[in-house]
Structures are given as C-alpha cells and as structure tokens.
Image 1 (tube, rainbow, N blue to C red):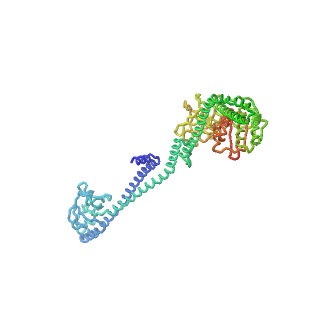
Image 2: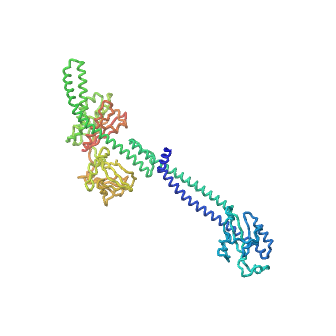
Image 3: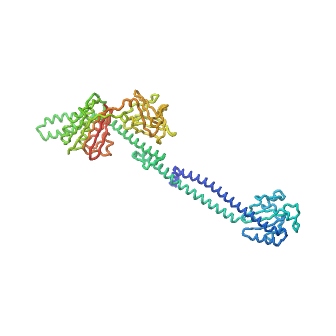
Length: 628
C-alpha cells in the first residue's frame, strides 16, 4: 500500500500529468456546457414542432366538426371524435360547453361530467376564477401527467368562439352576446418525444465522453512528446550531474524553450568539466609545491652525498671491471634521480623569467647542440627552416631553451630507436589582438573588481557580471581573452534576447547610455580596464561584437612562431587534452609527466601560447607563439 501511494503521489507531481489533468478539466467544462446547451436547444426545437403539430390537429378537429355543430348532428360529431380518439398516441378528445360540462368525448363515460377547473389543463383559462374571452395561441398547450407515475402528455385547449353562423343556425342554441361557446380539449401522449429526448441525451453524453477522452489522449501524446520526455531527460541529466557524472550530454535537443534549456545544460556541464579540470590541476600544482619543498630538503642532500661518493668510488674502481659496472649503474641512477628532483623544483617554483633581448634562432641552435648526440644515436634527421630575419624578442633565454629541449626530447622519444625526422620552422606572424590579448583587470564605475579568480576559462580568471533577462537573474562569466567567446552562462537564455548587466557587488548598471552595437543596434555594455581604456560588447545573446579601442588602435601584433614537428607515434585524441597536466605522461614509467607542464608555464609567463596537433601513427606538431 505504501509503495502504491508513493508511486501515485510521484505520478500526481509530474508536470505532464498536471497539464493533462488541467486540460481534461477544461475540456470537461467546455464540452459539458456545450452539450447541455445543445441538448436543451434540440429538446426545445423538438417540443416546439410537437406543439405546432398538436395545435394543427386541434384546428383540423374544429374544422371537421364545424358543419355538424351548426346542424347539431350529434351522432356524426360523436363518430368523428371517436374516430380521431382512436388514432395512435391520442389520449382523448373532448368538447366542453361554457359551464365546463363534457358534451362530447372519445371516452363515453366522461360525457356529462363536470371538469375540474383547478386541474393543470384548465388553469390557464380559469386563473382568475372566470373564463378568458380570448386565449393566445402560445398559451393553449400544457404538459402534465395524468398520474404521478404516468408518462407526460400534451394538452391542447382550443376555444370555440361564437360566430355569426352560430347565432343564425337553426338550433339557435347560443345568443349573439356569448363570446366563448365551449372548448375543444385534445390530449396527446409524449412517449415518443420523451424517448427521442432520452436518445439525444445518450448521444450527446456519449459524444461528450468520447470527445473528452480523445482530446485528453491527443493532448497527452503531445504533452509527452514536447514536455514530459524533455523534462524527464533534464531530470535524468541533473541526477547524473548530481552523482558526479559531468560527462553526461543531452541529445535530441528540440527547437523550443526546453531545447534552449537543454543546450544551456550541456554548456553548463562542459563548463563544470573545465572548471573541475582547472581545480584539479590547481590542486596538483599546490600539492606539487609542497612535495617539491619536501623533496628539496629531504632527498637532495642525501642524493648529493650518494652521487659524490659513488663518483669517487667509480674512479678508484677502474681496475675492477665488475665493481666498476655496478658503481656506474649507481652513478647513472643517482643522476637520473637528481634530474627528476630538478624537474619537480622547476615546475613547482614557476619563477618569473629573467627577460632580455635574445635571438630565437640562436636559442634553437643551442638547444639542438645539446641534443645532438641523443638525436644522432636515435638516427633522427633534423630539418631546419629558420627565418634569419627574425626580430629579437625579450625572453628568458635559458627558459626558452628548456622549452625547446623538452619538445625535442619528447619528439625523440616518440620516434624511438628506429629513426625518423624532426622539422623545426620559425617565422614572424602579424596577428590581430582579438583572440590573443588577455583581460587581466576590469572594474565597474565604482571601482569594484570584476575579475573572478575562482572561475577560470581556458585556465585564466574570468570576468564575472550580474545579468537579468526575461525576468530572471543570474551571473555570466566572460572569456578573459579579448575576442574569444567561451562565455559561461549560469542561467538559461534564448538567442537574440537582450540582457541587462550589473556589477555583482554594487549592482550599478554596466550599460552604456546612448550607444548601440554597430552590428545589430542593440544596447552595449562597458567595462573599465585600468590604464587601458574600456572594453565594450553587445548585450544580445548570439551577437559577439566586442571593441577595445586602446588595443585595437595598436593594430595587429607581431609574434615569433616556432613549429616543431616529428614523424613519431603520435598522441591519441583521449590523451591530447591532458598532456599539459603535471604528472600525466604517455611514456609509461620512463617519463615524469612534468616536461610539457613546465613548458606550458614558461610560455604562459612570457605572454605566449603553445598548442599541439597530433595523429596516431603520423606524428605530432607543437606550435609556439611569443609576442615580439
């Protein structure tokens, strides 16, 4: 019983059920009212037709008996009335004189009796205890029951008025002053009429029930397709995310508002995944910093002692080949351990570069000379296409040499001992600032900081703004790279909708008055960049216009680009996004996973970028860009 109650309660709380229930109630009310009005209208039309027919029959009886009345042929009148009274559904036909005595009747035992003037069929003529002189046609009919449990009957009261032919007739039964001579009373059964009305009621009720069920089913199908299934998919997706599965993606997205919500959900999970990876990498770096400090203190000193004494013993054991070989292994492994510790310290320190003017071609050749022996042993051919007209750049030459060596070592390891080719190309590029310049500071008009160090996009602190759209409030994190649009939206949005932007701290508006987007004419926002003017952008979702006058006026910027490509084994698509993470290595036990992480940190500190393209079995290409 408890399980059934919980299931029923869960069903009642579903939005699809609520919509179907609401539509069903609405359909019941509308169709019910329509059916009632239709049934009443049909009944009225049918009854009016029966009344008209009854009055016509009454007039026919008067016409048929008129001649015999004038001649006072009583037997013929009795015969006519009996003949008419024998017709189907004719209950009785009576003629009453002015005193209310039945003088003719299709039921012989009624003749000579006085009618009850208080009965329902006589009420209209004797409502004021005296007979009416004239009776309107619409008041001649009455519906009543002979007995409480009998069928309904229709009574037609047709007054017989005095005419000139009457007071001039041979019988001279009436004087000229008398207005009403008597009343013709015809009563007809309504059994067939009532049966038709009941049949109409059944048809209308059946139609109403079928219509309500059909409408509810049709609406239920569309509600399930357009609302229930997408909402259930969203609920399932949120449950997956709540359980920690940030890789869950909603497919079969519709083109309505729920589709926009599903797209926003996919973007949200993607941003959450990026944020989690950034947090994970930050935790790694923090842990590595603590580890490196401990390693430097706890391992470096005894390792130096081991290396010193083993090197001393190695020189003394030249005449003992067996001992000399063992000591050589100790020295080699001690040096390798020292290099691992040095890599840990280099990565953890991330010291600021000591910049000076340097020729990148010289740095590349110096790195190649360091790697020459290893490359020769691995039968690796070097192809250099260096631009001798490269301008000097302001860099830390030692750090840049370390980056080149790290990439060459990785290329050699990827190629292996069977030989291959490494190609190095350098050139000068002129690139637009859009997509290259980082927005490192941003404030509102009241000098509140808008940079959000807690939420990063592409590893960089984002710009956090408060947003209002369609009556909803939330936050938006803007990509810190000028011209990029990897924005994170913390609320559902619709394309082409306008937003209002505010400072998250003081809620001052960031909208520029009397300015509009040159591309779509929508309002624009403006962020103050200390000592670098203002960053402006469009407030309409889907429009990516941005302007940073101070940066744009400088025009395109020159970059020195170095491309290092190899013919090695390549990197899989699964490993490619992780290769710059510390401790992540594709070399199994032979690598520390720190070389590329250190290289990324050095290039980032120089304001440059490093990217990679790779294909399994065909090789890998690293691309470095350093601003001139």
